[in-house]
Length: 265
Image (cartoon, rainbow, N blue to C red; front, top):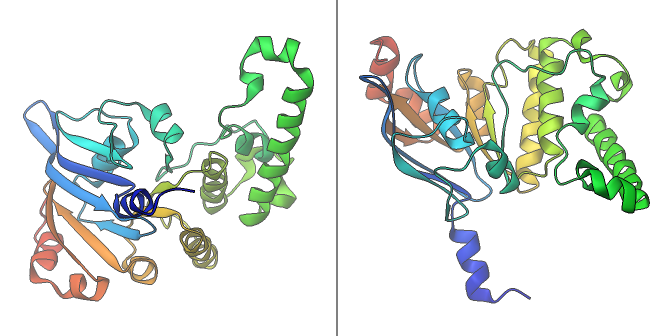
């Protein structure tokens, strides 16, 4: 049993935190001293006008970009220089605004690509432990099918991913990320290009994941969706932290209104 003091420390440690992040491209600072902490079990919104630096921040947090300065902590451990593979191995997964599935692979095969630490990835184990490899593969297929059921794509599991609509591709990407069992998910504009009927379903799935304990950081321009999902919203402008608060308070904040209407970038 984990000691009470250790458990309390774990619960109080943010699963994902950025401190003073800077990302410079030449003379331009796309992210300029940004700090943010996602609390355990939180569904946190990140908003800002176009050009505010949100996607660059996501890329830094996910490990696809390296910061010019600052630090990134995952469960209290410094992961500033770690790549995406190390981030997902430590429980942080991300989706993309424009999903890019493997078009000619089946829907089920696409989900299976999200699996981590499979014995079959090591060639020698296929020879000396074929039973173990086969059992893991069967378990992975069962898990992938359960996730397809969760995102209501089960009937399409044998179809090539290229036939999916934009909204279905977002659901497929979510299922693929969930194959890796992340504790924390970075969701990049899940509402973009999605029809209203499917959007509500995506909202319901995100809420269910959060209710199961997954910590979620959400970039989204759809403020109705943000208001449904998030109790706290952080606002970026010009690559910097602007303010934070409840969605209703943020919507009335003069500084936020000026950032959007005044074209801060």
